[in-house]
Length: 223
Image (cartoon, rainbow, N blue to C red):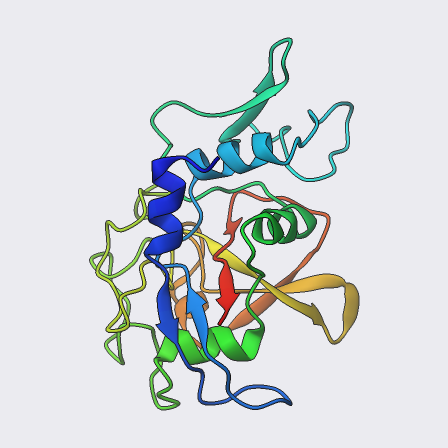
């Protein structure tokens, strides 16, 4: 059974119809209002029975980084969140882990074209999710201004009602990089990235098996 916090997260998803999509045309989706948080990630990892990560490699969650937020310990191998980071976005989850969490929620990772549409609210002239004003430390968490992630919802929402579309953590997308099938596209910029990563048009790719301190996830649901 989902916790009240997870039910609230699901219920808060924002209905949206992308104007420009890949073959099949626009279709209505619901977009998570915030990045998926550490507290919710621990809950879902336990719900799906994600095993502890052992040895020098990992399957879903990078537990080897000193800045990790998720831990799995104890005789029952329960996933927990670092105290005080329950409302921070969840880093360290690789692409497979992000996709598995989304599937458990009946969701999926957004395609790049969908992400661009909801980040811009279907406005192709918009440079950043908040508009065309240059980035500042009052608009987003980027450029080491905060020294790490911040609780979701601390910075202003877009006019669609989405938080941290730029900054805090990059977001895994469903698309493979066209130049390297082992990498997946990430969008949005992160707490440690320069301002140019916040632009809607900017994207980078990351090895899908890698869980880093700068990438999280935002589920979308097909309606």
